[in-house]
Length: 366
Ligand SMILES: *Cc1c(COP(=O)(O)O)cnc(C)c1O
Image 1 (cartoon, rainbow, N blue to C red):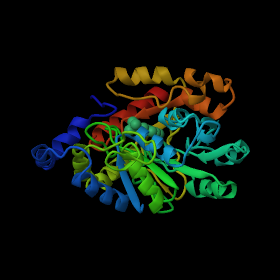
Image 2 (cartoon, rainbow, N blue to C red):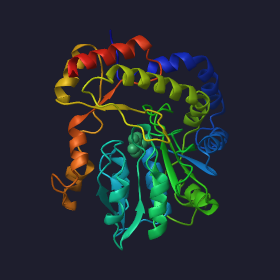
Image 3 (cartoon, rainbow, N blue to C red):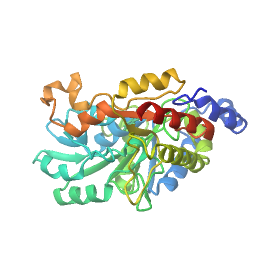
């Protein structure tokens, strides 16, 4: 049996009838950038995320960059973030000339270790960028309290966590700014690059909308320097259709996770730990195993795809070598990098496929 890590063609097949007419509308009108589809999507998205404003942008990375521009992040500023995350989290900070300050993770959830945030704060700290990794929210409530005590901004990197909940509040509903990605592998995936920024503050939303189009309030009048972060109409049209199905896809991922949890319970495989009060959307189902690279190969031999998120912490990346982190400086991040393995979890998998993947892993890992 073949169990790919991800197969997007199956979802497209089931949505084709619904998507083609909408795509045709965009093609027929040739209104290709921003416009009514984007506005409709922003309204639907804000409602879904319980945010006052949602601003569609060109990617999750651009959402982060745009949000950081909006808080006037500048050279000399320090921003606290995890090292165990996708590159964009820290790359955006560095692109504005600011310095990422990497903090270790809680080994159970893989999210930033809240107890290690305060010791990392200095007079130069401007913001905290926690990540909702693999679809489970960070402890945003506690992070907001720390930020309030020290006058810091919280930018939630919720790229992997649209629709995730903590104490029944969705990702992006509580941070100063929340950033989303609609990269095709995320739970809500566009037909290319797309992203969004959520916030409650009216003034901030207005600034973000200007920064999205080169800092321009009206055409050829530039109040500030922004970027070109516009969302394409085609992406918004596709996302509007897909958003209606998102809760049902989250539920299917959770069902798949339940099967893995059950089959792997009495094995040596360490299954994902979801904190009390959290509802994960399982963008990835990530286990820890001994002898990970060998396990990955043996799964592949049996037709089962898997992925490694992430093989190297950002503090160990060549481009951040000048920051001076040594091996051993973030021990939990480094240990996770050697042990994590993401298993197929996408909604369209059959129960049979998930059982086969889970049972095969149990045999291999013991
Ligand atoms: C995917 C992702 C991003 C970036 O999103 P893109 O749309 O690929 O630019 C940022 N942060 C995290 C944690 C991500 O997983």
